[in-house]
Amino acid sequence: MDGYKLALSKYAQFSDRSRRREYWGFVLVNVLIALVLNLLIFTLGYNADDASYTAIGYVLLAVFFVYALAILLPSLALQWRRYQDIGWPGAVSIIGWFLPLLTFIVALIPGNQGPNQYGPDPKA
Picture 1 (cartoon, helix red, strand yellow):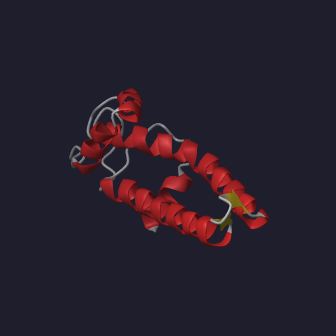
Picture 2 (cartoon, rainbow, N blue to C red):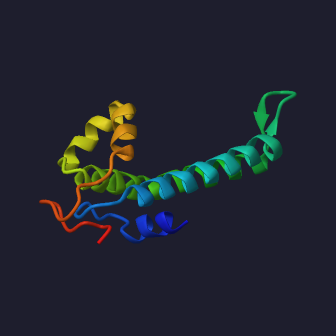
Picture 3 (cartoon, rainbow, N blue to C red):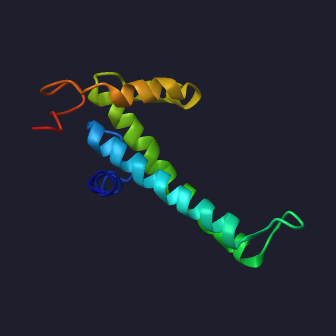
């Protein structure tokens, strides 16, 4: 949960670096929120008999959409900072949007020890 709060506190900050803990904390909380919202949508808001959404379903879909838009910018900024933590330019993260395996690998690599050209070591 700390990683999630830390990432949101740097909402649109593309400078500096982010640790793996911050990245994975943010990802984990987002996955859990998405799972809960999807579970609610398909248990409370979906009518399987005629394959349509109920009124509550549309409200929950709207909540899901608004949440997805709200976390888009901090997600991009966090990914950008994570690339910078391993010493790569943050702009390379754009490639990760099309090759998610690259971002997954970057998320597993430990950051550079000590300061690098993108800022001080976030572990220090």
